[in-house]
Length: 299
Image (tube, rainbow, N blue to C red):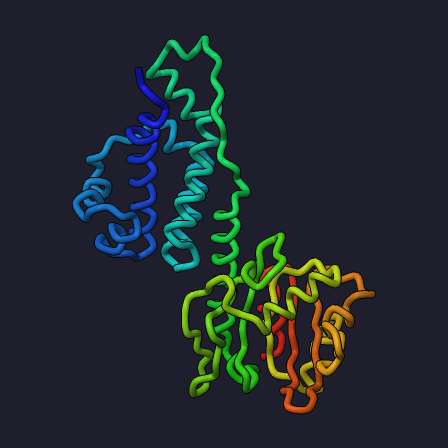
């Protein structure tokens, strides 16, 4: 008697690990770095590299496996994807392949008695909370890398600092919004990020994003930059909807400013300042990459 979990451990895991080790090496990681990322020994990486580990052709040539291995290798090599996110993605694929698919076929090969039996496995939820959180963090990391590598962005950072945030699809509170801990600051002409994105660490920019969502705007990301009339004029000339709001309004000024508007794609909201309030522009859109692209139009 063999369990399908044995097929995963003995057939799927060695094959996928060897594929992933090769892809990571192709992306410039050292053998030690590959071992650290995969949580295995250097000797195991060496065995994968020298073809000393058996691999199943059925898994090697599966297009879904190949595509995921390449996507995960890109994410791990760039830092956009965490090991937890990679694990979640492979877990979801494993459950898919167990459910009457290639792993089920390998299981039947090992246990011929299964061919005439009912064969049904409970598939993990592909939209699990953990997977959504990791996807949001990965999207935010990609946006941050593009933003901080954009020449001239440091000059758009207001005195209070900038932040780039992205929320979960069903976000209702600050804890559902990922952001840079602290703020992004201009340090000698360079945009400096103090730490890896986390959930629940932004109140200001996250609050603006949540207010826009409460007004019905279909947005999941936001970034704040400095304000002046030329910046607003440039954004308007580029075709972006720019909406002013009063920071001194008694209740939720962003929500009030957007409540009668139908927002699709990106939108810009701004305030020209108030007593003790620095003027700021907020770019909101469907994801971090989208709002970063708008900011890049200004430099």
